[in-house]
Length: 365
Image (tube, rainbow, N blue to C red; front, side, top):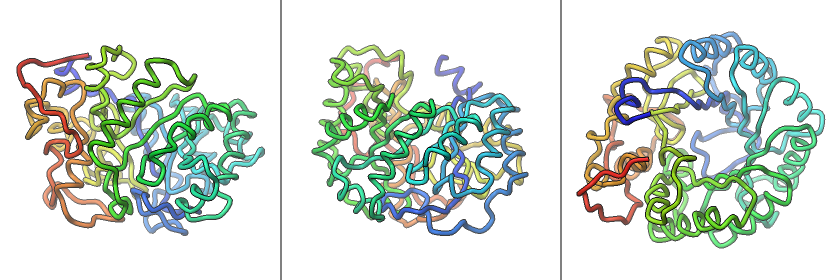
C-alpha cells in the first residue's frame, strides 16, 4: 500500500482492546495504570459484542484481547468465541500467571490462536520484583508451557529497562527454550505508570536496536524477533541493507492499528492517550476514517522537526507516543486527553532518535 493509499484508505490490520483495568500484578511500567479491581464504566458483555460488530464493519483485523489482565473478565471466553464467529483472528495479551492447563484448553476452544506473555528477566527474583508479585515468573512460564501444550502460538514480550538491558539475550534464549514462536522487544514509552521509570538513553536504544537487528540478520535464534515502540529500527535495518518487506513500517499506530480503552474510547495506540472518540457515542467506522488526529498521523507532511525532513520518514515515522509523552510534561496517568486539551505534541520529532537526517531523498519500502 502506498503512502497515499494509507492516508485515504487506511486498512485496519490490528486492534487492541483493553478489556479491563483489573490486574493481579503491579507492574511499574503499566501504561493503563491497572489496579486490583475492575474500573467503573467498563464495556459490558453486550457492548463488547457491539464493539466487535463495529470492528467487523470496517475490516477483519487481528483482535488482541488485553487489559489489565483480560482473564479477570468473567466473559472473556464468551467474547473471544463471539469475535471468532464473526471472522476475527483472536489473540490475547496476558501476564500468563492465570493460565493453567484447563484455562489454556478453554482459550483454545474459544478461538484464541495466540497469546503474548511478558517476561522481563531471565532471573525469577528480578522478574517478580518488577511485576510486584512473588512467583509471577514461575507462573508465567507455566502459562507459556500450558498454551504450547494446547496448541496455542506463544509470543514473549519484554520491555527494555535499565534493570534488564544486559540480559535481553538470556531472555530470548529462555523464550526459545520454552517453545515461543516470536519475541517482541518493547522500548519504554513514558505514559501511565511508565512515566516514573528511568529510561535507557538514546544511545543505548540505538545500540540495542543495532544488536537486535544483527540477531535477526544472522539467525541467532529461531524466534521471529521484532522491536516495538522503536520505529527507527527500520532506518537501521535499511542502513544495514536488510530486507524491509516483512515489517512494512516502523510504527503502524493510526495507519493499520488502534486501541480500544476499557470504557470504549478509541486511541491511536495504548501509549498515546489521546481520546479520538467513544464507540458508545460514535460508530467505530466514523472514528477510524474521520478522526482529525488519525488523519494528521497518516500525513507524513504533518511531521515536525527532524522527522518531518528525514529521508526515512516513510518507513519509520518516529514514535508519536514518545514524542507526545516527552513534550507534554504532564501526568496523564490513568486517563485520556481530548484533542482540544492536549498538552504535548504528538507530531513532534522522535525524541530518542540520534540520527541527523540528510533530507535529500525519501526511502520507501
